[in-house]
Length: 543
Image (cartoon, rainbow, N blue to C red):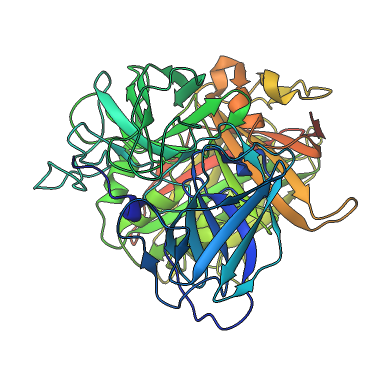
C-alpha cells in the first residue's frame, strides 16, 4: 500500500569515519528528545536513533529489504538491558547517525540499559539508553521533533498551511484540516507487538495502550492506534479533528500514562483549506496584510513593567529582508486557550527566533516623545544599535506607569515619517503563586487585573543542570500558554508539567499583555504598540 516513506521521516547526516565509534546521544527517531528529560526513554518496538561519530561509512547506507540486518555496511549495535544482550536490526548507518529497531522483547530497564556501536571491528564505550514499555514520539516535517507534525489525510496527502495545485496523493500539500474528518498522525513508540516484527509490518489496533491525543488542549477521539501496514515500527494514530480548535499553529501532543510525546503543531481551519495565523501582539488585520508583503517595514513599541522594580519602554523600526511570511512563521504562537512546550539542550533556553530574522534597522528620528497622565513627559532616546529605549523609574505608585493612556510621538527621521500612537496601561495583573507544583495534577492559575481585551501569557520552565549546584544547563523545557485576561483563570494541564522532570528549579511567569494598537507612518507598512507586564514569578520545585 502507498504511505509515507519511512526514510523521509528520519534525519540523515554523514561524516568521515576513521577511528573508534563514539555514541554521544540516543533518542526516539521522531521526538529527538535527548537524555535528561522524561520523554527521552525509548519504547519497546520503536525506532531509535544514535548520534555520534565514526559509527559507520561516510555516505549513508540504508537497508534495502526486510528483515533489517543486524550488520549493515560494517556497522552493528547491541543493547544490554535486564541482563540480556539484544542485537539491533539496523535501518540505516552513517558516520554520525544510525537508526535501529528496539525489538519488542527488549527488557524495560529502569533507569537505563546501555548501547554499544561497532564499526569495522572497533566498538564504542557503553552509552545509557533508557527502555520503557511505551513512549510515543511524533514525526515532524523538520525531522527534529518540533514544528508541524506529519499528519495526513486518508490518501496520504499532507495536512499543511498551504495547498498545492496538484493536491492529492502521498507527499502533496492539501491544506489545513477541518473539524470532523479522520486524519492519520505518524509516530513511533506506541509499544511492543507480538510476532516477528523484523520481517513484516504487524498492523492491528493496540487498544491495550491508554493513549490520549490532545489537540489545542482538547482530547481528540482516537479511531485506531497501532502499527502501519507499510513499515516496521512505524505507528499510525487515526483520530477525529475536534470541532472547537483552529489556527495554523495548533499544538498536538500524545500522552500514555505520565509519559508525554514531543509537542508538534497542526493547521486547522473551521472550513476550507486556509488556516488563520495568530501572533499575540499583532492585530489580525495587520497580520493578514503582513504575510502578503514581499519586504515589509515594521514598527514595534512596547511599554514594560518588569516584576516590581522597573518601568521602561523600547521601540524598534526595521525592514524585513524577505517575505512577511518569514516573520509570521517565526513569531506565530498557539491560539488562546492552548499551551506549547519546546525542549532545548546545552543552552539556557530555546533560541530567540526574532533574532534569527534578516532585519535592517530603520531611522525614525533622534528620539521619541512620551506623555502620560497628569502631563508626565519622558523621552525615548536612540540607542547605539539603532533602537529606542527609556527607563521611566521604579514601579511604585505615582512614579510613572500607573493605569492610564500614554501617547508616543515621533517627528520622523531618514526612513520613517512622523506618527502618533498610544498605549493604554490597564490595572496590574495580580496572581496567587502556588507553594509547590505536582506535575501530574497540573495547575490552575487565578488572577485579577489586566486588559479585559488583552491576554495573559503563562510561561513554565523546568531546567536540568549538569550537576548539583551547577549553573550549566543540560536540558530544559519551556512551555507557553495563552489565555484571555478577562477569564481570570486558566488550567495548565499535566501534559505541560510532565514534559519536565521533577526539579527544584521550576519557574512560572505570568505576563499580561494589552490588546495591541496600530499606527501608520510614511516608510512603514504598519506599526504596533502594546503594554507588557511581568507579574511576580514562581521559582520553586516541580515534583
